[in-house]
Image (cartoon, rainbow over all chains, first blue to last red):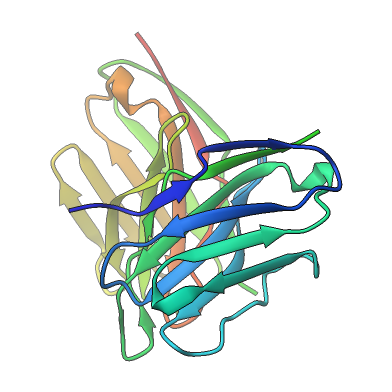
Length: 116
Length: 109
C-alpha cells in the first residue's frame, strides 16, 4: 500500500520567508510525528499528533514553528520567518497506536529545506 | 533523559560482515529499532527487537541485545555495496522514540 508521502521534496527559500511542509500519513495511522535531521545530527523530535488529543509540541525549537493536522490525516508544518539554521531535512512519520502505546513508525522521504 | 549513542562511521569490504553498535540509557525501553537511510531518502525500518529478547535474525541481519549493558548491535552478513547507507538505532516504549545520530556505513568494492 501507499507509504508516508511528503511535499515538497526540496524547498529553497530566502531568510525571513515563511514555508509550509506537508505530510500525508499512511491511511488509518492515528499517530503522526515530525522530526528534523540537521547535517551530521541525529533525528530531533519536533511534534507528535495522536488522534484528537492535544499535540505534544515539546520538541518545537521556537515559536516560529507550528504544525496542524486537519481531519486526523494530513499535517502541515509551518516555519515562519525562516532562519539559516532552519536548513535541514524535515521527516514525517506515522504509526498505529494501541491504547496509547506508540508502535513502529513509518517514515516519509523527507523535505530538504535550504534557507539562503 | 533518554540518550542513544552510535559511532559515526564504519567502513567494510564487500563480502565482509558489518557490525554497527549502539548504546542507550532508558532501561524502560520496550522496543529497540534499526532504521536504514539511503542517500536522498527517508528512513526505512529494517528490524526491531522486543526488550525481552536477546537476539533476532532476519536473513542477513542479526540483532543482538544486551539489556544489562544497554547495548544493541546490528550485524549485516555478506555486506553488499547496496548496504551503503546511514543506520539509525532507536529506542522507545511508552515515551517518545529516541534516535541515535546514525552510523554511516561505507562498503568498499
